Image (spheres, rainbow, N blue to C red):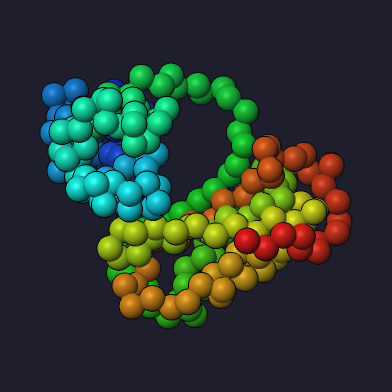
Length: 224
């Protein structure tokens, strides 16, 4: 089995560190390294900056952490509203969010970064199988079910998209989860960039629901 881990002095940097050595490695960002580590990364790699926000930053000439750090707080608040101070902080390696180890889990997911880019849908189908297995094992172990399946795709140029499918009933079994995940994958057009990462997340609208509360109706309600 392969696993990646990131260690740092705040949540933002720990998450970046966990991505840094995927698919198999440990990376530590010390307090002395934090600001410099952020400076050279594209803003599209930052957790909390999605594709739409990254595109907006690109239009404003903000391409890297260094570019983001150069922006005054007032400018970031004017352009990005309440989240502006968060961007101001992470550009300096600062994230004061508390770590809550015992919070209620709202979703369960798994993903894999591949050693080589995938271009063929059949390869992607096969690559999704162990990811789906991991998600479903967690559901079985905890007795939980979810109603929304989300597929995450990261391309070779690090651009990322997600697609979700919600239903009136919770996912009934592993085959049901696979069918919904593959439906999302099959709806995506092939891309010349190649796929670097695939992930599957299972959630309900707000929380995972207990297996005892899950209904048996597998009909899809709202494809997105």
